[in-house]
Length: 157
Image 1 (tube, rainbow, N blue to C red):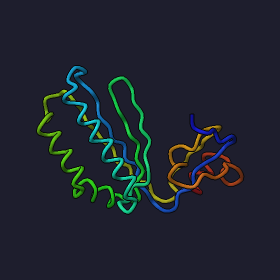
Image 2: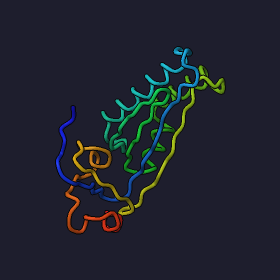
Image 3: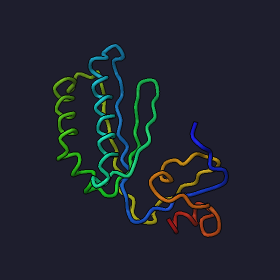
């Protein structure tokens, strides 16, 4: 189990960044031959990203429910994210295989959302939590003084 950081903290990020939410949904549970390769490809790409920080990937957190896998990813910029999506051989191969094996047959769904966060236009708080979210990719700092309230944090970043 992850080490709990007692107290109240927020994350400090330098400059703008991107929050990218990506995931897959298993629509036909018995179609393992369709969704398992998608899940494996996602894992392989994240491994590649962690091994190559120059790609602009800052980190991610995954969660699973019964039929859905979701990743919240943090990127240095939209340009880094877009370059990876359009030019990384591993991503291009996975996308081609998905379209060939699944396409529009409905067995597996995939989705993503992209949010561009301007410097200082975010707010977060972590109380008695392991290092998490922006705290993993930014600097974890006490949520005291000028960072005490949500209003203060959103104005200070």
